[in-house]
Length: 455
Image (cartoon, rainbow, N blue to C red; front, side, top):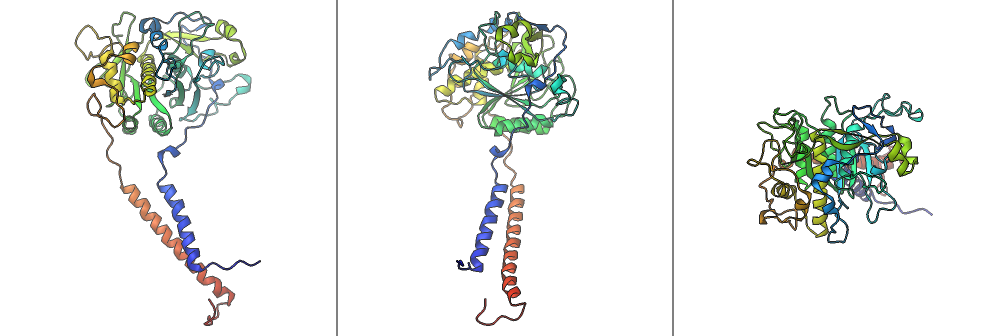
């Protein structure tokens, strides 16, 4: 059955409308369309050979004894869940991390309620000397030492089979590890860091970004951090380990929670950053911190008891890199409680609460290395808070800690150019369709003049 022919004008209109839809989608694509980097396999992490590392039973973690996060975990939020960071997602921008191998970094099937999750994605790429070189024969290549330590301090699980008190500060939280560094010793390009921050902002559900890095000022990183803060994501960064060296970044950017480190006596560690331009928010334990290192990938097939006795690798090491994730874990506890109450804490409000509830240093605040003092998890979560630090019901309320640096207004030039190009393409497309419609009957007539009764 022959269908009636559609008029040339209608065909042109339909073609132009379809093209307009395609072009509009490509020009006005939302930020959420950006994808995470490629996913990596945690068994590609190579075994570490760091000085002082231990395999087997962990010792007690002094920072857990000092900060007593169990006082927070013992309380329930407004939804009846223990306050362990449940429902909070943290982007850890670091080296790769070995997740899912150690029982400390995988969810137990007996864990009640919402279980934490871990994901590992890549932003620096890898060469044949790293990934897949001799994976089947044990020739692993990813440097995962630094990232594994950081992640373990955030959400390592508290294991009944472990005799120590070690766990992450927010064991109920979930972590996305964004690999933006190949190692923890070399000076590397900061472009992957900026890309990872921007993707963390575009990824639905990320509440906190932990950056245990200290580098130079970089425009792309600065803009990415400002973008994250403007979108309500709390950014926590290590202040640096060079002592009186001056500001390190991204910790020194506006809106970032900059973390210094203390010794077991609450004194500032000598290498904790200070100097003109260094604005430390709070400090946390950072000297000889117990944290996990990559272990034998075969450990995932062992029982928990056997793995902890024979395969778990860990060590103690100083650094603001390890003080920062402790504060990140505390922020996760704060955000869980607030969210359960239907409230939103802005980055500025989180910062102000940490400042007001920290254990102050002996002298004036802010201290050059300790800021407002040592973070206090229970007070940071439960208060009491002065009126200036109350929870905001909406993210649009005025921050209590003064104005934040907001990125400059959106540059409309690219959009104008894109729209102009779109209109030009549509015009050419419409012309092409019209020419096609004119040529079709001409070809049927073999280009003879049309009669009055022909199209």
